Length: 121
Image (cartoon, rainbow, N blue to C red; front, side, top):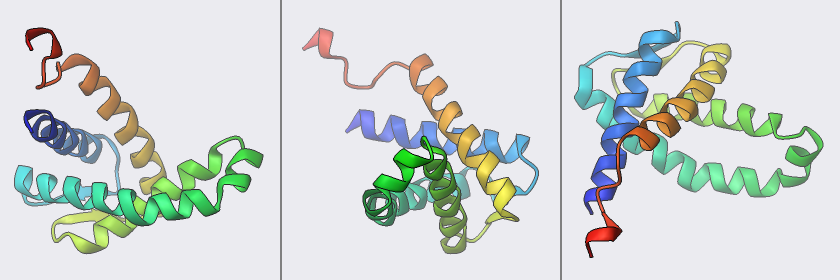
């Protein structure tokens, strides 16, 4: 449970970092909006994103994964439609934002230890 909350916080912080560095991605409303947007992004990627990635698998292989980046950008744009205060202006902003969001999330998850420490159990 702690691990899930920690990942949620990391995702929200990553989104704020992306909004700071990528022109065209806006999180108006601060950390609460980023928390809500992180949940929506996770839900959209975990439902619709999985289905789309499943059906486009052969094309993703042919494009050497570039199509995955395009799908992630569209998922980010779609997520922005559901959250007041979270806005993505263009596809280019979504494309760059999805790449930076993935990298930022990965780096922060490497820096911050897991909440469920298996060594102490």
